[in-house]
Figure (cartoon, rainbow, N blue to C red):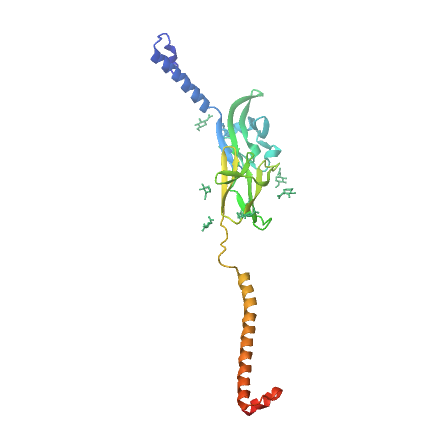
Length: 294
Ligand SMILES: *[C@@H]1O[C@H](CO)[C@@H](O)[C@H](O)[C@H]1NC(C)=O
Ligand SMILES: *[C@@H]1O[C@H](CO)[C@@H](O)[C@H](O)[C@H]1NC(C)=O
Ligand SMILES: *[C@@H]1O[C@H](CO)[C@@H](O)[C@H](O)[C@H]1NC(C)=O
Ligand SMILES: *[C@@H]1O[C@H](CO)[C@@H](O)[C@H](O)[C@H]1NC(C)=O
Ligand SMILES: *[C@@H]1O[C@H](CO)[C@@H](O)[C@H](O)[C@H]1NC(C)=O
Ligand SMILES: *[C@@H]1O[C@H](CO)[C@@H](O)[C@H](O)[C@H]1NC(C)=O
Ligand SMILES: *[C@@H]1O[C@H](CO)[C@@H](O)[C@H](O)[C@H]1NC(C)=O
């Protein structure tokens, strides 16, 4: 029935011809989309892959179920006995009640690939394939927003900061930007955890702290990127800092006290001298006794 337009070609009229082409294209598209199912998950998440084979309980003893990834074994279920291959131990579940659905938790980056469920059934002494389904699993690992931390002062006017992002895939590239221009980082390092395959990237940057900055640390990976802004405001100069004020007190207070004392002594002496002057004779050191008489 679906082939009708293709039987038309005897009549070389272009509208029909076009229709036929469109039909072929449509069939192609349908075939493509009904091909291998696609599932995309993030690292550490759980994935649930359907096998979708309907069976009756009596059948269970004469069935063999194989889950495999690319060319490696994941799990087998033969006459009710389950076996899990080492890479999938302790994180794999076969839901027999849900038509042999496979669940993996947590997902590793290395779990990406095409999973195939094969069901064989014993018929007249030998096993016959009854069912096959494939699911393509892609595993993402997104970098979190990078962290920028202050990393000391290599010299008087210079401040050092560090940008770090960890736990992403594929291999990242870290760039420092200011006003759209790329700055050169110090000791930019990229490392990969051999077990999880996840990357860590870090870089340091020195900047002159005597003026304002608006710096961006950008981490690009695959067709994604994450970035973090860092702003630096030049510290104000106008109000002198505490130490300065303390120094001023330390210097000015004794000077003022000393000056006050000198002035006081000068006036005291002068008033005494005046009093003695009134008595007529200056008696020198014995002045104290004269003072007592007054
Ligand atoms: C399994 O059974 C369900 C209903 O019970 C049906 O919709 C589905 O098409 C069956 N699947 C297969 C592969 O036979
Ligand atoms: C799985 O768990 C068991 C018990 O918790 C442990 O003995 C075994 O080493 C684990 N296997 C793997 C591959 O992690
Ligand atoms: C980023 O900084 C936050 C808060 O300072 C901290 O909790 C987190 O662990 C840091 N992340 C990394 C990758 O260092
Ligand atoms: C860069 O790293 C190397 C090795 O760890 C170290 O010797 C060097 O001092 C670092 N340079 C800076 C500017 O931190
Ligand atoms: C920092 O900037 C100030 C003002 O532009 C300049 O005088 C000083 O030399 C700079 N310091 C360094 C280490 O580049
Ligand atoms: C970070 O800085 C860039 C450029 O300086 C700016 O376009 C962007 O909006 C800033 N992002 C945030 C979150 O402040
Ligand atoms: C630096 O930033 C501060 C706060 O945003 C602002 O008040 C000051 O004028 C800026 N200085 C310069 C030189 O742009």
